Length: 140
Image 1: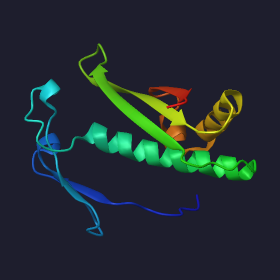
Image 2: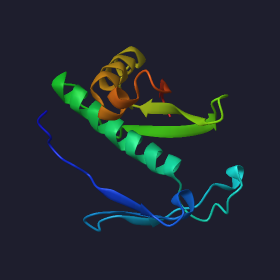
Image 3: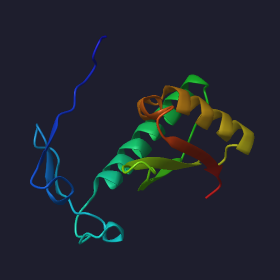
């Protein structure tokens, strides 16, 4: 495999109630368990980080697909909601809801672009078959 880039991060402290930082010191955050899961909610949590990463990665894939199809996108956005729930076997599972907004693009074409982006996005490829991912194209 020809590796194009490697990201490194380190978790210290108590995991979800600890700290994460990248090896190049460009990113560091205190973490906290969400109030909904019995924590203080006073910091970022892994699901928020995953949601942000997936939204940005999918948005980039969407723009790449559009360029390849010679479709000009303006003011596009991708929202991501990552949900955590019990898996029924004593552990937890994730699900993802992506909302794609492509102003000025017909709904059918926007859905086609979103479907194509889902095939090339590294996050989509990593999660395919592992977690439920729902992609919705909306006007707002």
